[in-house]
Image (tube, rainbow, N blue to C red; front, side, top):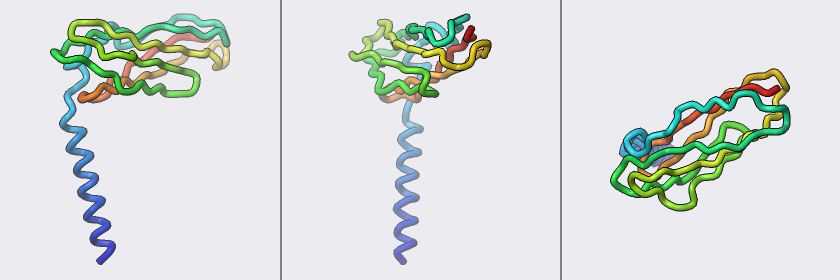
Length: 129
């Protein structure tokens, strides 16, 4: 009987999480990225680079970036500290350390988690020389 109750609880928790995820609007209805893919070109080995991913709030409400996730330890990202008001531009600072072997192209991703919207993934590429 305990197994039945445990399975029932897990089922309802899974359903609740799935329902919540479906309630979120697509990120493209809330923000418009200035670019979907950033080409950083050639970067010197271990010198790295820093750049900004910019987006415009196209909704009628302030946009809160809850978190910014990066795909590996070679990348760091900083989310905007304050909400981005409607029609305004938000910036996400991204740093890449360029420690992969020279001559290697790279393709990295940054996932932007927006309050009340689905996550948005943006990419950056380049080559280490």
